[in-house]
Amino acid sequence: MVTLKKFSTDIGCKDRISDGGVLSNSSLFDKLEQKVLPLSGPEPLPKSHDYDLVVIGGGSGGIAAAKEAAVLGKKVAVCDFVVPTPTGTQWGVGGTCVNVGCVPKKLMHKAALLNMDLQDARCFGWKVPERIKHDWFEMITEIQNYVKSLNFGYRKIFREKGIAYFNAYAQFIGPNRIKMTDKKMTVSEITGQHFIIAVGERPKYLHIPGANEFAITSDDIFSLERSPGRTLIVGASYVALECAGFLIGLGFDCTVMVRSILLRGYDQQMANMVGQHLTSLGVKFIYKCVPISIEKISEGVASRLKVTSQKDTEVIVGEYNTVLLAVGREPRIKDLGLEIVGVKLNSDNGRIICNDKDQTSCPYIYAIGDVANNRPQLTPVAIHAGKFLSRRLFGKCKVLTDYINVPSTVFTPIEYGFVGLAEEVAIEVYGKNNIEVYHTHFQPLEFVIPAKEDNVCYAKLICLKKDHERVVGLHILGPNAGEITQGYAIGLKLGAKKSDFSNLIGIHPTCAEILTTMEITKASGLSVLRTGC
Ligand code: FAD
Ligand code: NDP
Image (cartoon, rainbow, N blue to C red):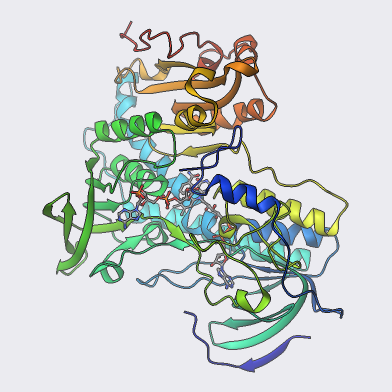
């Protein structure tokens, strides 16, 4: 029974080293612990419930779980609510990926690549005017229209599948019971037999003067109605580098402020190559530097922000039109009422601890996606987890989500795709003498006529000698690396050896074929630099 009442509320690496695992920010020890997690916490009450499944969070994972449960004939509810950013940005149902992540990001990546293609086009005989202009607002409008169509699509799916959708903020108030507060502060309560928490994460802010008032995050950039202008990006991981990539590609002056190193926790040789390529495109990097204050020095559309930063012992000052914080993401689950139902968190990162069945310390509550501890924070991971969890709960399926060997790509102008171990992790796990690295630079055919810089693109296969050179890491930096890595990832999942890669006949002329022809090992010390002929 749904009850309604008015209520006032406050809404307010040592990385994974499992064989072939992708680096994540969580430790090996968490991974081992999750297998023996004792289950404790309130048991479900033996009574009927409003829903068979209540999903908290209508993003990638939550929607996948809800749809699958509905297909299996279950009565399902989804609650999704977006707390606006400090600058007031908010969006519709669908979660991070659709609204403020993968989808708008990839479209902006495409917009930036088009600019580069337009420059190249001249070399292929196209008469492209010298001065070409990009309209930020037009791009944003097109992207946001598409995003809104996806929001609409999800609501339609809910209706068609008979899923109850509540655009409300959910909080546990007792065993098997949540209250939901909508934007008019109307409160309702529902009960469920099973719960899935799929509330994702939100960008972190910096505790420095001016950050909340004047800086934006990835939650704002994709719907920013004014052109960003001269932009400072603080942070140096996925979000920071991808944003730097599309901003420079769109023609904006762009600086990245790096606290330590690029893409910490990921293969450092590849990370540095990503950085070098961004530098060659014009991105400025300020290393060993953190901001200490942000002040507004002029108002208006092209408002100017003064950023004071600490670089080693020196204080430096810069002026920008936009400051984009990309300093990581965090779960916002303090007020979810998890202590009431006995759901345990990892005290280091605040994420929900689960066993390998995605079950939390409360037996009828599960957690999937970004909010779950020790999972790669990627959309297809959340979707797979949601779909297979519902199949296990309500169907005959026993298949667990395999969180190892998950492929991923950093969508910088030259994409960096990888699956399996970083070279330094492979060495740490197996020892340097047990690892053979095959590698080479390569020049995509399409780079030849525009005479693009040599030795930008690179690939390596990290192989385990004692297991017939089984490939435990694949890394490629080049155009469409995401597409390439997706296909080859099945090889790593099936335990492919270097000889399997060598026996595979390539498709010519492609970038992907380079992985079938690599002969030079790092140990040989032979040069893999291309000399231009
Ligand atoms: P989310 O999609 O974040 O959904 C959680 C939902 O729950 C949100 O709508 C939230 O508002 C809602 N919610 C939170 N608390 C409550 C509550 N108490 N009650 C009701 N609702 C609540 N991944 C890729 O695979 N490829 C990419 O290219 C990629 N690019 C990215 C780019 C950026 C800029 C960012 C930030 C992320 C990117 N990701 C990418 C990561 C990907 O977006 C996430 O891994 C994915 O969205 C996680 O899905 P989820 O279901 O766990 O959570
Ligand atoms: P990360 O946690 O990976 O990186 C945070 C960055 O911010 C690091 O460079 C860190 O530096 C820096 N930082 C943290 N605190 C501060 C501070 N106080 N001052 C200055 N710098 C600071 O976060 P991201 O948000 O980039 O990515 C989160 C996850 O989202 C990724 O791991 C990925 O799973 C997912 N994602 C996936 C994408 C894709 O698939 N293409 C794209 C975007 C995100 P330091 O190294 O010094 O700690």
